Amino acid sequence: MSARLSTEGARLGARSLWPVAFLDVLCVLALFSADWAGAAETDLPRATVLELKIDREVEPVLATYIDEGLADAARRKAALVLITMDTPGGLSDSMRDIINHILTSSVPVVVYVSPAGARGASAGFFILLSADVAAMAPGTHAGAASPLIGVGAFPVQIDETLRRKITNDATAYLRSFASQRGRNVSLAETAVTDAKAFTEKEALDGKLVDLIVASPEELFHQLDGRTIKRFDGSQTKLELRNPVRAPFELSLRQRFLARIVEPDVFFVLLILGVLGLYTEFTHPGLFAPGVIGGICLLLALYAMHILPVNVAGVFLIFLALALFLLEAKFPSHGVLGAGGVVAMFLGAIFLTRSPLTGGGVSVSVALAATLPFAVFAVFLARLVMRSRKWKPSTGTEDLVGMQGVVLAAIPGIAAGTGNEGMIRVRGELWRATAPQTIPAGQAVRVSRVDGLTLHVEASQGSAGSTKNE
Image 1 (cartoon, rainbow, N blue to C red):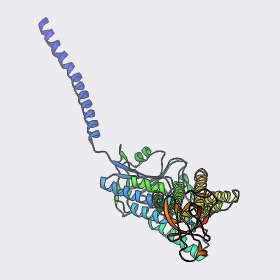
Image 2: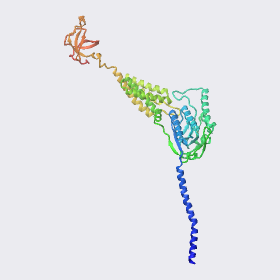
Image 3: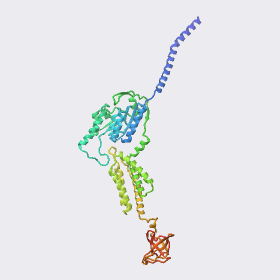
Image 4: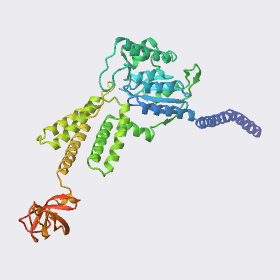
């Protein structure tokens, strides 16, 4: 009886453990499935986001950089191109080039005005509205896109008809892509016609931009899974979960050209070019100053083609060079030199100044380049002026003023024919003639050279071959 009870108890105990064991198996399977799902998720290919920057004035070098970046994104089959913007604007031709490549890009493009305090003004406003997705960070602004005329030497006075023509062309170009992007065209036009600017909240409320985000990570999070409409009307769903961010930097050539078009570098290149050619012209045969000066001037001309150069600034620089030359020639007690320094400093300040940025040659660079240039130019000019007073050190002209001794008596011109004698000068024998008779052994001084005959005069000094000072 007891054996039967114990067997039944064992059976009941085994039956009661089955639910517990089943639950344990399910938990283990759940853990394995979660680990497998996580591993599978990490094994999935991650989307690539190519990152570009517009962080200065819009100009041809920057346009080339953006174009190459969009082409590289297409080759990589990137999921998105992110252009971070902080620009005061720039050249309309470069702006149109960038916009055309954005509109035709096979990869969706996001333009993001960032960080806080950044702006997308003038040409930047057009670029912002041309993107598939326009975003702004808190504390940023955009707009003020009225076209400016007369950037460069002097303000250009235009009549009302021409002003309307330029404004209407700009607004029509803005409408051509802003309406297709679903932007508020009428509000966007006020940035051109009335030079109106918008904060990030005003732009979002006015349907000029799509998002306000504080960071690129937040931007990717909000765009993940969103379907956007491309410029050609097609629909694209963005998959941006944990994307790979690939910065696209300027090439070495682009960085070099970008440095050249900076106002400070442009001014230094112009000064070095002028100084190098001036040194070569005043001291022929040195070669190095001429080569370096020529290269610097050509680079300066390249920058001049892009920068808004003020002709008055160029004239002031050349006026300064003329004043330095006059300072070396005339004893002005430093007045001409000081005037040249002032003229060159003002020329540097006026040389390039764009109404878009208010930027130009910095005061520190202007002073650092002007003072050494003034000293060197005056020094070279004085060397040239002094060298013109030196007597030739080679050739027969060097004999003038030399002393010699008569070896064969000189009959003198009054004696008629055969009035030539023989003298020794610098250890050389020369035929000589004189106004009066000079006996042998007498010291003479050369007064003139006529071919191979020396005209001499009797000298009271001792015979020799040194100059009579």
